[in-house]
Image 1 (cartoon, one colour):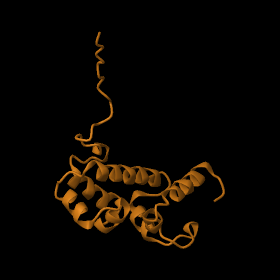
Image 2 (cartoon, rainbow, N blue to C red):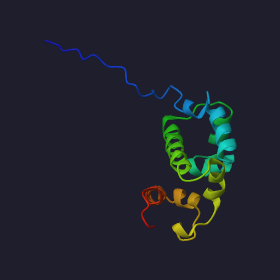
Image 3 (cartoon, rainbow, N blue to C red):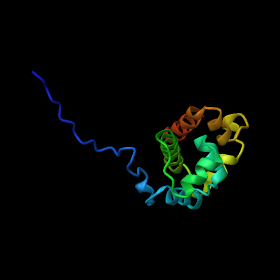
Image 4 (cartoon, rainbow, N blue to C red):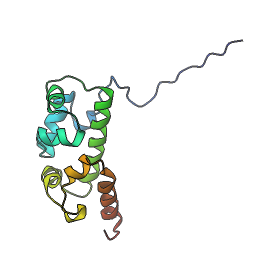
Amino acid sequence: MTTTIKKSKSSYPTLTEFRFSHRGAKDYAGLLRHYRTTFKMPQPVVVRLTGFSPRSVAKWSEGTPPSPKQEKALVEMDRLLDGLTRVMKPEQIGHWLKSPSPAFDGSTPLQVVERGEMDRIWRMLYDIESGQPG
């Protein structure tokens, strides 16, 4: 006797669907334009936040979809931007990412991300939002 399992359609987008329509973009080029204008994040900042090459980010700007691994990095960056907008104005984020911070021992938040220490930024956000002393 064989059993067939009916696959249910997930409410989550598949990797072929555009995940970032909440940003008002219809494609990756529009998404990167949104990041540049709303968060004042030039392309080199996106390169550093995602960890992918300038060439890859340039291709996304031209409309080439990212690989699943690259899209995961974009999702993580997008989540971080959402977290940061809860504690600062969106147009301040690009500048903040490039500014040395005593909260990170004089490193910039971009350097913290590049070292793989994103949890330090999430902890800072938690402390600010909960009113905990940092």
